[in-house]
Image (cartoon, rainbow over the protein chains, first blue to last red):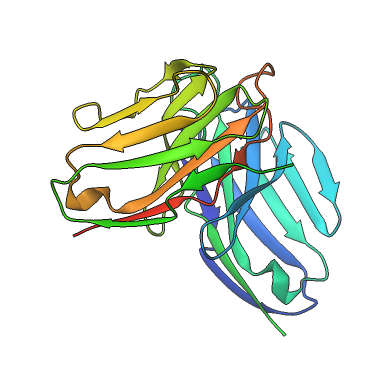
Length: 110
Length: 117
């Protein structure tokens, strides 16, 4: 059974800092997703990746297939980046869908 | 373009009562997902539809939960009777479909926050 672990669980940083959130999974994957959840529940998909690196604005996601590890980086962090960041992996085979981590609660202070 | 619509946004009921949640996916999206998210946890899949067919419902507690997507567009998730442990946020998501499974972006609705007393 695939398990997804995120670290840290909680992160508080100052505006402008470089942020790294880590995600480890136990089973080889077909796809890994990073999502953002704001207070009130709305979830937005940030990235889907299966190899390498993707960048969108100040967000960068990387994945190391051999080490079963992915990272989400935020450059020049801003208070509006405050949210819960969730990674989710799909190991293939169809059943059970995405396995979600518990999320990293990020607070960026002005 | 309208996003995924869910209603109601909040629901408070007493245990043993029935409750239903409604979801309208993004127009043209063939794949629809229902998730349950407990406090402090990530979402967990309850059921996935491809058009009107439920293709993955292995984690749906079928003794009290049911779902339908009769015309392959909007969907309803029902709980009858509700238990205290059903208190959670119920999320609906959709994706275009036609791509490799779980390798496409899912678009989430705002969720329905259920409290069972």
